[in-house]
Image (cartoon, rainbow, N blue to C red; front, top):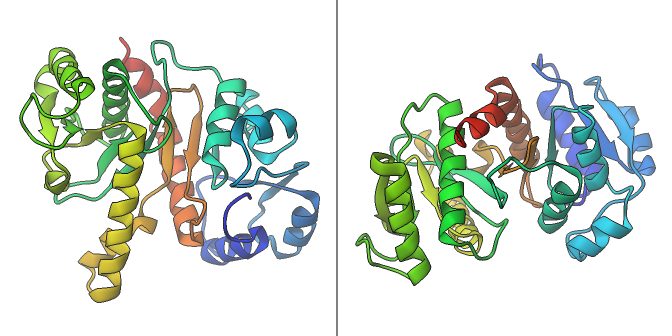
Length: 299
């Protein structure tokens, strides 16, 4: 709930996509009583229905709404995570509210002073982890190092033994960009050594040379949404099996890194296909012990 598409319309599409499939996980749906009542009639997947008191809209003030709407779906989801009632929380709601609720209800991983959102983008070789894509507008060099470690941890969960890291910048030379980026280059090189391949320009990001692309949340969000918009444009112009891999709906949502639980944020305008991919992607994070991988990066 809380996204661009009416909840019942979205739920119906998700049920249709999953109907007849044997799922390796169980779904619990959080919704207001009116939605839960109507959805119960179309629930053919044995989805557990959990009523909540309210929903935080996309245009609401994040921190104010989290504090005033204590029975909102975002708050309830975080509380269920804290109590180990659920293994992961997937949402298309207000990103700011999600971040605020995670800070209020969930414990942070030690040594990670900031959380970050990680998203996957295709490249010539394999999907590339990009972070931060919107949790923080600005980031210090030490934050970017933390983001790099988060990305490394994720890629290790999918079988990449020695992930390569790049820093998104306006040029490949080590002294390019703002002073924060110059300092970040030095910090990444010093701490990650051979894993850090240097600065990566936007035009080279998809060559497949890096497994993790690090940037601040402002730049990362623009980069991600520009890429998604371009891929949708291309998909309307060409028809091929390879082109389907460009579809952003083929990749799970952004992963909130830095807290001790698994939280996945899908776009507010996510289609049913995108949410289903988010569910399967979230299951893989649980199955491959993503949080344990994050913790190991701190040792």
